[in-house]
Length: 89
Image (cartoon, rainbow, N blue to C red; front, side, top):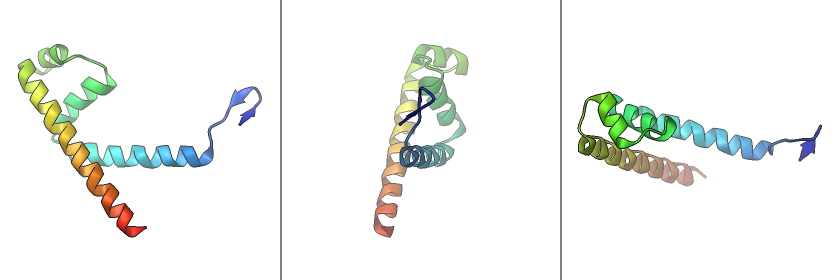
């Protein structure tokens, strides 16, 4: 859809993205503060593991472990959420 020469997003797509964003924020809140920090630095700030390790005064291996555990927790929570919502439908 284009108006005034600018593309406009489909309202249904915007609603879907908004819902996905809400679920992700909810999942992030379930992580430990350190895990939240690692995920934010890695995927939002686009820092590499060595940079994060330096900033957090941790070893790169510890950052890798935190990232791995955080992503596993996020995945588990989001899958559980999907299953709950599928049962409701």
